[in-house]
Structures are given as C-alpha cells and as structure tokens.
Amino acid sequence: MTDAIPTDPPPYFLAHVFVCCNRRADGHKRGSCAARGSEKLKDYMKARAKELGITGVRVNQAGCLDRCEFGPAIVIYPEGVWYRAETREDIDEILLAHLVEGRRATRLMLTEHDVVPKG
Picture 1 (cartoon, rainbow, N blue to C red):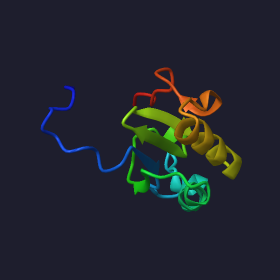
Picture 2 (cartoon, rainbow, N blue to C red):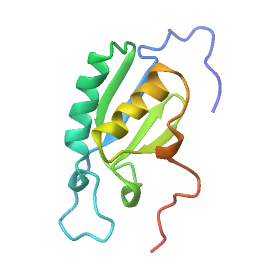
Picture 3 (tube, helix red, strand yellow):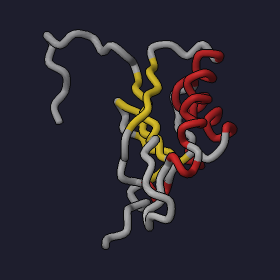
Picture 4 (cartoon, one colour):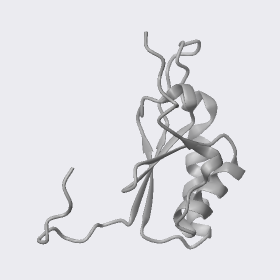
C-alpha cells in the first residue's frame, strides 16, 4: 500500500469503524456476528460515540468480515485494528481507548494469532 499522494483530498473521516452484522443460518459451523448480538452493539456504538462527542468518526454496519469465530468482530481504519466486543462495556472500552485516547483496547484486540480455522 502506498502513502497518500499530495493531491489527494483530506480524508472525509478520521476513522472508520466497521461492525460485522453478517447473519448466517442458525447452526452454521462458523456462527455469525449478528447471532452474537452485533446489530444491537453497532446501534449502541453509534449512539454512544455521539454521546461522547466523538467527531470525525463513522460507525458502519459491515457484511461478513471473515472472522466470525471471534465475533462480534469490529475493525477500525485507517489503522486496521481488529476487536471482539460482546458487551456494551466492551464497546465503551474500545471507543474510549481507541477513538478518544488514541491507544488500544488491548484486552479486546484480535491479533495475528486469531485466525479462521482451515476447512
């Protein structure tokens, strides 16, 4: 990936948060983030970000992010940092750490060790 070209316009958002809301059939071997409550967590995250006065950030629903086994999955760009959030408290921790304080919610991070099993 290359750096921005000097003639590129400034980014429209400082950060873009994608919350997986993919839903698979009940009983699917990989499960799904929606079945684990991601839709309600996404709605809470959007409302809570607004309550906290976080600006320049867009929280969006995403289709499958392909890390269902670890979900509900969230990824924040431009850094490309992945999280797993199961509760409103997890969402608060991610918002405050990553988007307010500029650090990481390390307890909730998905790393290179969290890989989808083959087969």
